Length: 279
Image (tube, rainbow, N blue to C red; front, side, top):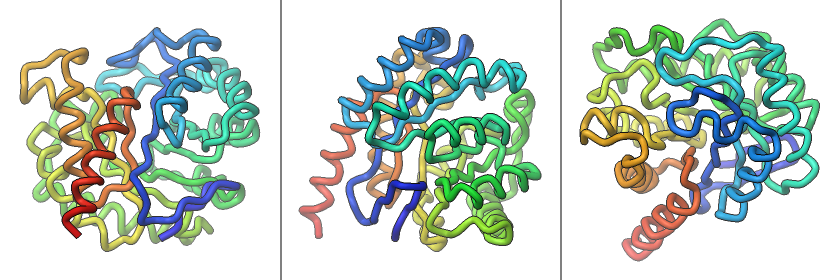
């Protein structure tokens, strides 16, 4: 299985990729405001690569539950100086975490290689055609509702089946827009319109999505469901996030999105070493 993101290519099976998070926002739930300054964001991204990140994901609009939307011009003002500076210095793919085609287009023009589409649940033909035209990698993430509404009353009859049906429908529509299968990454959207129980069901059922023969991305880093289950504040949730990451890698997940790159890399490499001795 191959993943192609413009000039970058990954062939699986291989060690799981860690996607390092760079939030250029004042209000993200864990690190909001820490990297709002361009220099701080660039330095943080470079540090994450040193720690083992093989993709850097830059976002300028918080998607935490209840987060207020920002204008396209403000999102561009936040992310573009960071993308522009990193594109000439990094040898790993840059991902733009956005819901706006205009932001994605500007980031790709500046050197990004992946669109992390946090609104893939909507009517997204402009974004899909942009991915098709640029041959960028495309993260198709499931969510129920917007950041403003998604945690008000998330409800499913069978969350694993319904996320699988979403993937099947979106993969077909992406193909119809010209997005090649090798560009696609599937993300079940842990914490995006799901209760703690829904998240646990999904985390325990990653093998159900192997039938799509596309890399799976899981983002669990310090998320609120860990706090709900364990009574932990964001600063205390790293052990819970690492447990989720290791379990899903053991079940075939190929990409982990994380704030804590060094710790995540070490944990999943240990998991992979153990798994290698079982085969």
